[in-house]
Image (tube, rainbow, N blue to C red):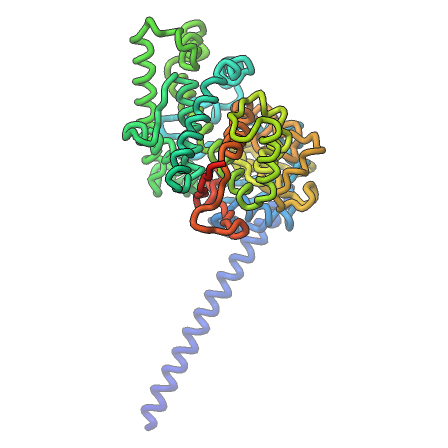
Length: 512
């Protein structure tokens, strides 16, 4: 018995010793973390960085982002303010969450904040070296923007291509009419995506590159879709650049494959146009304009730039338009009284069931208000395109160090309760007596950005979305698929480079 007691005593003593060792290690780690956090706090104060949550070792504030970073940063801004600094892995990041701070950065100090923070995925095929989206504000960027503004998105050019857009919208209505006859639901986002893609392909190449029944066209549609998916994935390399060589998630590798296939297709279309010299100039489409420009000013734009510009246009102009239309239709179906009001306006001004033209939109104020309200609540790109400062900058008395990534949270600005009454409510009427516009002058509403980096495709978007939405509303009555009640419609968001609906909107068109 004594031997047993002795053994028990030894075990107890050993356990106590191990417990003390673990406790000492834990206390040591806690002390080290406290020192690190204290040093981070003092470092922030000594550098006069904007306020923000204290970063953890290695990961910084990454743990605070979750799967809905736009919502997480909006919530953090309520504690730390609309000008907030964070450490996302190795990357110092400035988050802007109010219209006042957005104006400071995008207007008053626009040039200082005009460079881009380039995601690793965009290094595929060195796209960042050619793309007007990612190039720094310099001679090449100015040349490409001038070409875009003068030859693609100018009022005259858009007027000349209006018949193309009208035809694509009518094809969308015809597609919905087939579903109407069979009673099948329409996947609004997919149908709008296909319409946007064909609109761009007709504008640029004078031909459709996708339809519901062609395998080759489906491949192109899937390629563009996959590019948006890969670009929207959180990438460890963007937070820890030391991992660049390893591409641990394979995002750049897959993006290289997708980019390569699209560029190969564009190269074939350009060769086809160059080989068929007689039709050159007869189409008077964007490709003609770009090829003529490359002959007249080869130092400003060459074949490679033409291919990359086309890639920019397809990637930037499809998902954003289709997502906006899907969100607008979702809001209409969720609030039937708003849909009823919109349809009444259309019936009175246009005539029930009649086609809508772009010139009609100016006579449809409530429809325009619906589009604005949709863009307020659901900006296509919630953080706009990330910016970066190339030199130390001072903003409102705080220092923003060189290399800082800048995120303008357009989603948070559009839902700011200090700006918008009943900010979370879908209420198009708020714009009926308001002069606020979406063209970058009013910083309370900047779904397309502002300043010199404002989205060049804005003039096309403000023509396309109202006509597509108005046509869908004026051609059919609509009900949700699956016997879902309007109040039960799921409005959850899926975060990516664009803000998608987490669950696709399925709606059944009904004959008027």
